[in-house]
Amino acid sequence: MKSSSVFVCSKCDGQFTKWSGQCSECGAWGTVHEDGAAVANPSSGTRGKAKPAGKVGSFAALDETLAVPVPTKLLWWDELLSGGIVNGSVTLLGGEPGIGKSTLTAQLAIQIARQNRPVLYVTGEESPSQVGSRLKRLVGATIPETLSFLDETDALTIAATIRAQKPALTIVDSIQSVRMPEVTGEPGNPTQIKASSAILNEAAKDVGASVILVGQVNKDGDIAGPRLLEHLVDTVLMMEGDRGQSHRLLRVFKHRFGSADETAILDLSERGLEPILDPSAALLSHRPAKASGTIVTPIVEGNKTLLVELQALVTAAGYGTPLRRTSGIDTNRASLLLAVMARRVGASFGDQDVFANVIGGFSAAENASDLAFCLAAISAKQDQIIDQSVAAFGEVGLAGELRPVSRMDMRVRELERLGFLTIILPKSAKLPKTTKAKLVPCSTVREACESLGLFKVR
Figure 1 (cartoon, rainbow, N blue to C red):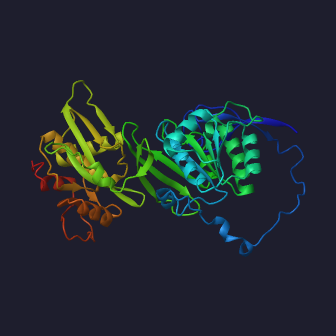
Figure 2: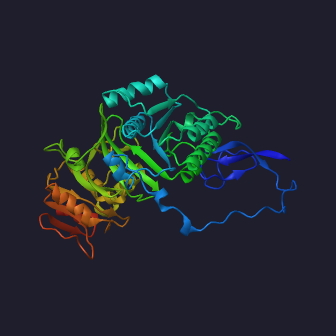
């Protein structure tokens, strides 16, 4: 049978007969790699041959209890995954190096092993002694006998061990270190990751053993490896945060057995990851008393509303081209909003450097934080202080108009709970109900600035 190599895009899984620097399907650069698996030539005689019919079953005869989540008794984890881990499920846990993924998996392994349920920890990236020292630090006592390790990187050996041992949970740390001997390429390349994950997924389904695959993320924030990997697994979790801070966000991006709109807000310490009971209060506990360029805005993380402090600093440009530097805010979005402020409000930043930051290492990625950024920027430009009892949210359009955003009621309730007295927000046909705070609905960003005395009509 004649076979040939193909080239696959790790972003969209497009297939090509030759290598190219840019994928012609999705436009991504540097994502086309040679697939080590041989592709059969369809003209080699297999086309048109009769095949036996597949086995057909009835949905009514299926055992529904097989898809019921099994609680881990790690309460915040069970809440995140709608009750626990489903037997035979495969979960992909992604995040930057050093963000706390291995700490989380060690914590989870200990919790399940303490229930006399067998746990297998595949130590592909670290040595067993390194993982063992982390486990001892977290457990503070003797490691349960039901927690075993396998120092192996061969995907076939790992899959055979899962079938033989039938552990309640298998943790593979990390999938980038696992390889398939029959597939060309070094461990960690897209072909190896895809092939290894498929073998482990098959083993998990065969014996009903849950598997967690730990994966690193690339420079774009995507889980390293082909996008197909995210479709292969049942659950995709992403851990985010600033490594210089202790706060972590664990988001559910996909979950076949429950809600994919869940987020856990955690604190990373020597004891492991612990839930923050009141994250908004924790993030706002160190606000500067009298400083311009700072305001609070509510962001929605899954099913939770989180209050974050957005800060801006405006200085005279030291070089020919003004700088735009942001952390936690999209830089392109910030430049767009500054252009709106110049054209629609008359506040030009053309000869000034603008810096913006979301305190705590979180990201205000949704457009609901537009208004807060505009108010913080003009506050910093004018060096006028915004009262600490004031908060703002709303999307800003190119015409300078304010547009309503999702879950306005949730945002207002969280601001009221933390004692904010004035809330600047877009006009809407149905404003949120409030009993404590004063709502200041505005039609334009200019009107919002003037309501706080930050900018006068020219």
